[in-house]
Every structure is written in C-alpha cells, then in structure tokens.
Length: 175
Image (cartoon, rainbow, N blue to C red; front, side, top):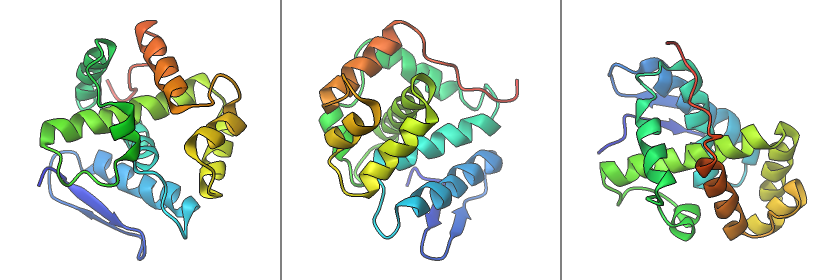
C-alpha cells in the first residue's frame, strides 16, 4: 500500500500511479528492467536491485525529492538501520510499514552508493556477475573487491565506517 510503482520484468512493462514524482519513479522502474534483466533467468538480490534503482532515481530528482535519504543517513550514522542479516535476506517488503520500507530502501541505496562511489564500477560489475553465477554473497564480494570484503559483516563495518567519516555523497539532482 506504500508503493507507487512496479515493473513486470516478463513483459518489460512499468506501472506508475499518478503522483508528483513521475520522472523519478519512471527512472527507478526502468532501472529494474535494465539491472534485473542482467540477472535473468534468475532474480537479483532485492537489496541490490532496489539500491541500484534508487541510485538511478536520485540522479534525476531534485534535492528536495531526495531529502528523505539525508534524514535516513543521519539515523544510519547513529546505528539506526535494519540489521544486515534482515536487510540482506529480505525477499519482499510486503509486511513492512511505510516507515520501515523507507528505511530499507534508503539503506539499499546507501550500501549500493558506497560500493559504486568507493570502488570501481568494474568491481561492481564483477560483483553482480558473481552473484548472477550463483556465488554466495561473501564469495562474490571477495572475488570482486578482495580483502577485507570476505564477509557480510565486513561490508557492514566498511559501510558504517564510511558513514562515520562522512564521505557519504549527497544524492545529486536538480537544485
């Protein structure tokens, strides 16, 4: 009930409810067709799919439209985020409240943004390819990024350390 758009990957169709953020929602859903299509015939992990889609969405939105991410970032810096075990293993968000879904989406964006901003895009591609080939998350990370990325806990610690250093980049968009 909190969602405003969806994508049907089988038909490459995007469905968007009428609202003020058509452009952002459209780019978000189009990103699913592109990124999730890479993983066919399997599915990409939900956190990677949604994180990538939110990352693309923020690029076409205004600072005001992206302000929810900045609020969530402050909470993450204080340790108020979804436990990585729950976050990484989420298969769908149908039982999440609007607030919890907002936190989850922001966390997905933040982790993907960390991987794209602090590592090379080639490493992210290799990471995605490794996941597509069926590697475990830990093995896929290690093969793509090397040490210390050999466990999901290492990813969590590196992401948190990056937030604490305030190297987190504010989502870009029209000002």
